[in-house]
Image (cartoon, rainbow, N blue to C red):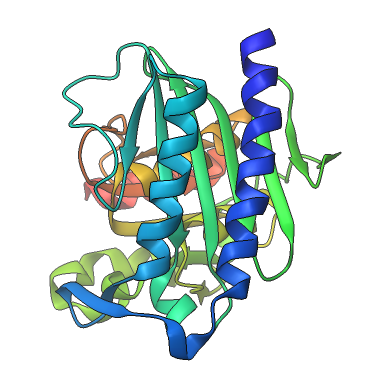
Length: 259
């Protein structure tokens, strides 16, 4: 536990330092590049933040490994030992176009088990965190676990591909069974909406390990579910079609997906 508490203190400090760098960046000083498509962007700040976080992790925990979005991590073939999942700016498109609804995320796993998760809403200055077995917190104040609602009792969150691309049209029947659909454009902040009880599920057609890791720790901490669309376990070495959900809604979503 002493190692976990040491990490907890440092992670909270490092995330706040990263946020200060992000906030100080002017829009006109950003260098924006396309990755796989015109709506898949990376900025010089994404790269700078991940490089800085990776450097700090390696300095304090040289035996640990890192899985990062922008190439400063390790080439992981397994999840042995301690692995850090780093997403320097989750919601880069929002960061570039809106200057809000983006987050810094860190997840720490030991032997493949999530032990710590952190999602920092930079603009709202809210740091959400969880240590396995100790509950979920916002700015070090414990949060109440959300209610376990069914699909018909609440809103679902999703990514734009599920709603716009015809190859995902079958999944829209899940939206029809809910009370409505909402989108923020940040996997981490969508998970926070679930933890706050504002939605009963978040579904995304393709999330990378760094998009999932921190939120998975938090969602499982309140007894909710995280899986692939077919109900199988998340693979933190690959991309996943991902569901974060209340227990009741999860069973309904998986049943609809299987038809």
